[in-house]
Length: 387
Ligand SMILES: *Cc1c(COP(=O)(O)O)cnc(C)c1O
Image 1 (cartoon, rainbow, N blue to C red):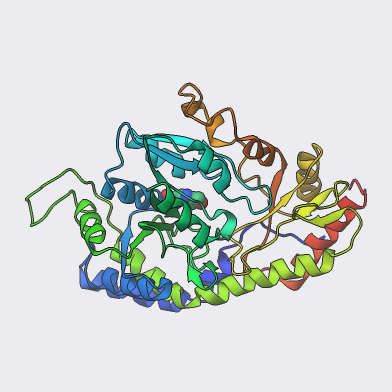
Image 2: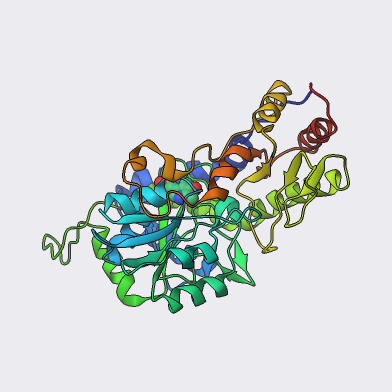
């Protein structure tokens, strides 16, 4: 038995510890703790990495979404299309502005927003769509842009789980009106606290977001509108700046782990890839990177037939970390049930996935023994072993 945590941040950060300590000392001695050149340098390199014109460091991924929505004037009476199967912040940021989330169903294979369902749910008040590149996989960005321009919608890309993911070479966060990502410690570029990033290709939107990030203040102590404090700390920026050049190698290692799971489980009894037309008798479905350029923030299995919780207990007994992302679709969250936002009764795939998904370890520093133990355990379960 090999202990396999779902995520171990230790090895990745320990490898850079000396550089972090130097950066911390530099910031400490600079006495510059808000904004400034360290943040700007980090933003510049993020923009270059993503191929975008503007990147703004902010206080969290949630605030990145909120700031983007504010800069687009999304407010009361406006509807925003978003998937019901995602992390809470996607819908929470819309609701906090008094706007209305409209629940869109997701694709059962990619777990991403279903544009055909989105088309059915466009109404006269719909102003924007927020695709989420869930678990690190991009959507077809051409289809997304065609959809948005056909319906005259703004696009805010929730790329919190997909920094570095691409579609036909184009980075997520580069084709919407705004892109938003998070540096929460469990994301692919994980910080040492909360922070996030907003991107845009539009000069005017960038300027608006920049001003809203500091209380709508321009120039100093003159407020033309109400913003908030959405700033990212230069200390956090300095630490993340050390990790940024390593992001491609982290993402590559995650893909290596995913490839290993696929290769070692191919053709095994009870296992299949989660593709259209997959074997109905399969006990475990393995996630597929349809874009071929995803970054595997999570490796999320589908366990049909009501056996998900049994697999979770099975893996836990074998000391393998696993987690359900996400157990309750957003339209069923207590804070949203009473509102019965449009779409609440027509997102069957979101409901089904919440009952079937289980994410297993995929972090870059997994050892050979660890991933072998995970893969052997999945094969055992699928073959009918009970412990
Ligand atoms: C993590 C996450 C967020 C929020 O990011 P924070 O930095 O934790 O605020 C938003 N959307 C999705 C899909 C996420 O996974």
